[in-house]
Image 1 (tube, rainbow, N blue to C red):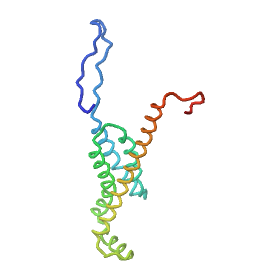
Image 2 (tube, helix red, strand yellow):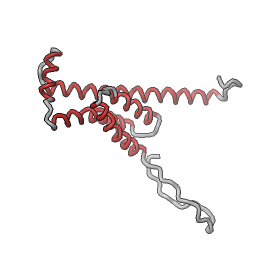
Image 3 (tube, rainbow, N blue to C red):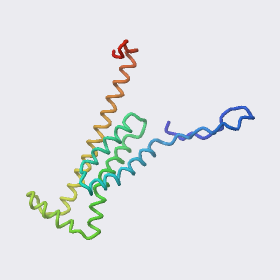
Image 4 (cartoon, rainbow, N blue to C red):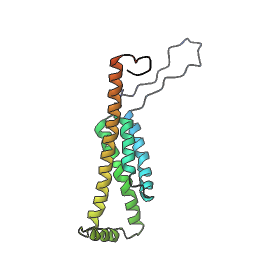
Length: 167
């Protein structure tokens, strides 16, 4: 049901004024986009406070929420991955614009790690890690919900459960 259905008054008797209009189902992709936009500040604040794993967790939860639904899978995957990268990139950008020596810190960390002392390389690697966390979380969430839904389908095909509730 991706098309928006128009509201129409319910078919009732002319004297029934308590009947309300039917609800309009929203496009699921818009709901996913709103959920992803809500995840960006959560990931950003979490990364400021040291919760480096939030791109993975939020992507897994969004993958579970969208895995079994009829939404545009590629678009939601792109939105969820972008949320993880933006969630980690926003605090980096904020710190850089507020005058913190972000590039110098990245060069120092790169030199200590045995990498070339290029700030762009380390910042890009940081954002790549957020992208990978988001992809893996999305994969895990969609896989988990897919397993649960296939298990449910198999149970319904088998028929009713036994007297103890097990098959």
